[in-house]
Length: 162
Image (cartoon, rainbow, N blue to C red):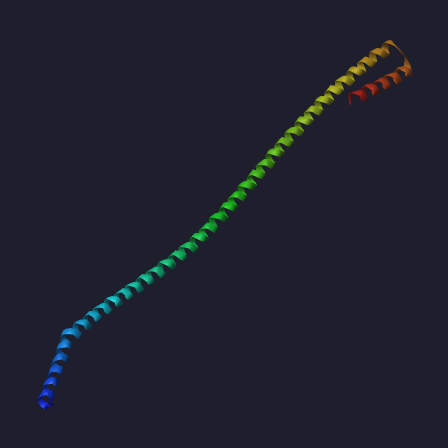
């Protein structure tokens, strides 16, 4: 049978205390040190990730700002291009109007010259008719009959010229 004696209980308690101290020193301290080291590494990784996230947020903010600037620049360039195109279009239209006006003036001048030429030709024809009529009168009739026939012939030939 088992005897419970005080020496055995004190020996068991001392053995348990020595075993507890030995396990704590040899097992728990290294394990806790490893856990603490891993916790520090994890915290360092979280800090690094937070820094990277902050940098990414800053870069995103810069990108958004740059993109907004690019959009504004694009609008400005398109606006300037439209203004320039409108100006060039107006210039082309104005140049075309000026050219049309010049062509119109040239045509009017040519028409006036042609009209003057026709009038001079008509005057020459009329003068020839008057000379012909005077020649016929001198040789054919006398007095009022001559004047009347000469007037009728002049009016008839003048009507043909027009």
